[in-house]
Structure formats: structure tokens, C-alpha cells
Length: 447
Image 1 (spheres, rainbow, N blue to C red):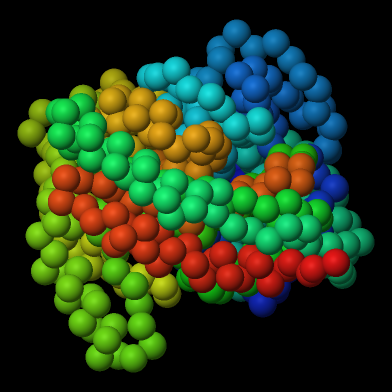
Image 2: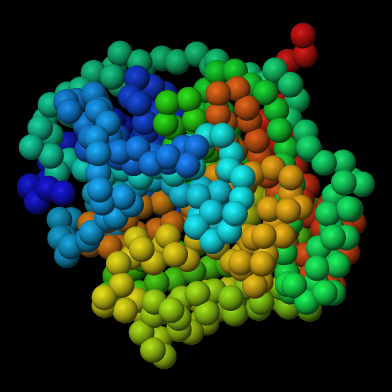
């Protein structure tokens, strides 16, 4: 990674949408956008990237402005960090961006089938666009920074207009009916009674066929959900659109790590009285508190393996955070990473997140693999970044849509415990995803 003085130049006004920029960069083999709360960033023209698809790791190196060649790399998945501080700005400042799918992460622990699509993408992005007060600003650490700037500017001007091409050829609907969900729910209850597990995050898939770029829908989904950990990634004909409200791990300064598991959901209502009642019901729910604390304990245990002794604590427990469609119960666990621990290795080891597996984690993943009937793919994995000093932020890929070739899927589910009610859990799936599902289906036109 480069130690060159950073190249910085304004490239677009702030009113230009991330979607329109990404559409203009359609000729690039891959591109990534992260909302990163209020610090939007677009990574482009990675110098080096790794992709895992169908169980095979491939490494590519950029040869010129946008030509990549495959190379042999004995390092495998490995990124080292230094203490470079180029900019006082927070957020992404150059380094690793990408996603790690649930299938890849879970396969490190258990035997499972994987979705026929990319399961991991990680790139070294030394050139990127950031949305700042004065507008979208181009940054680069590369020796050919000016050439990259001119190339990107040319793409933006050449492709300044874009017509929507995305459309569903079948309506997006649940793969399971209510009876099938009930059967899976009952099986979870039997495993809990037998002592195999305490909680299982049981999810179901909604599928459709489509043509065109999923990207054409992005701004409407981001506006609908207003999600703090939204994002988008494209690798050739694979697209991942995140509307996630959930942080997995924030790698802050001074080796501080923070995780914010979500467990507990109630719907939002337009009527302020009903909405307040729904929020209070969640706040008072002993069942949701029990679910939440199970996952907090699991994550405290996960973090303690990598944390300095005595540094793991829980500053927030059972907070209620309100999003556009739902209220969520959110807790916070923090710790200090040991000096000898590589943040990237810690991230790989901690995935998948406990909030989307259950407890105990290994057995929970085995039960999920048995009962859900289809690989999750990217869903419940993580999308995010690392700076070169090891700081960074990674989400949990819930409320996310994935498209590979002509197949589209979106998932939803929740934590099942011995106290769970099947009808309520089934409804919770729709509380979480119904607004997104209804919006997605507006792109369906019957023949």
C-alpha cells in the first residue's frame, strides 16, 4: 500500500446522487458504495482484489486504469495494517473495502451449501470519492492519481444520463408458505427442548427473476429505509444492495471495538399514539429482553477472545432505536483489542454475527443449514471497510437485496426462543421486509 501524499480534488456537486455516480461508472468491473452513517464513500479501481466464488479464491491485480489480470497469491486472505494517518477526516481514508457473505463465514465452522454467486469480495482501494460539505471529492494515494481522476471524470461526463433498465419478470414472493414456516418453527422448538440450542435466528427467503441492474432501484430503497449502514457493491453480474440498520463491529481509534446487536422488533405506525404504544411494548417485553441478553452474552464471549483482559463491557442494554418501518431493541458491547491481534483476522473469526445465528453459535448454524432450505449467500454477512491503520466499520447484511444474473432474493426472519409464538414470529418477518418487498414489486410488469 502506498505512502504517497494524498491527491484531492473536487469532482461533483453534493446534490448528485450516489446512484447516478455508480450508474456512470458502469463500465468498471467492480464498484462499492458505503453510506457509513453520514460519511458516504465510493471505492473505485482497486489496485488489488480477491473474490471467492464456488469455493475458489481468485486474486486480481490492476495493470492499468481498468484492466485486471489474475495472479497467484500465496498469502490468501491477509491484510496488514500500519499507523498511517493521512487525513484528519473520519470514515474511509484508503484501504480495504468489500463484503464477506454469510455462506463464506459459516463455512469456516460447519459444512454447508453455498449460493452460486460471489461469496466474498475484498479490494485495496487507494482511489475513492467522498461526499463532503463542498461536494463529492476525489481522493487518491496512487502515483497515477491525476490519470485516474481524468479517467473517472470522463466516465462521469460520458454517462451523465441513464435510463432505468431494471424490471422484475416474476413477482417477488416468499419461498415458504405459512405451513412450511410453521414446520421449521416447530423443529426449532424441538431442538430447544432437547437442549441443542437456546435461540435460533430462523429466516425465510423471498425470490424473483429480474433483468437489468438492481442499482436502478437503489435511491428509492435508501430513501424508504433511511438505513445508517446502507451500501451497494457490484462485481460484474453480481449486485448487493444493503439497507441495513445494524452495525456488526466498529473498529475505532486506540483499538476500541464496538458491536451493537439488534434483537427485538415492533412495527411502526403512522398514528403517533399507536406508534408510541408499539415502542413501549417493545421496551417492556421480557421475551425480547431475554433474546437480546442471550446475544449480548454470546458477543461478549466472542469479543473477549481478542480483547484485553477486563476491557469488555456493556454500556447500553435494551435501547430502543426507531427506523422508518420498525422499532428495534439494540444493545452495545465494547472492548479494547489486544495489541497483537490483526483487526481483519478478528473480523473473519467473529463472523457470522451472533445476532443472526443464535446460541450457541456453531449448533445454531448447523440447525439453520438444516431447516432454511436454501443458502443465505451474502445475507447476514457483512459489508464494510478497513483503513490502513486498522480502523473501520462493518455492518450486518440484513434488509439487503442480492441479484446474481437473473435471480433476486431478499430475506427476513428473527430469533426463536422457547417463549416465541409462531404467528408473532411469522408476522415479524413481514414487519421487517414488507415495505421493501412492496417497493421491489413495483418493478414488476405482468405480460
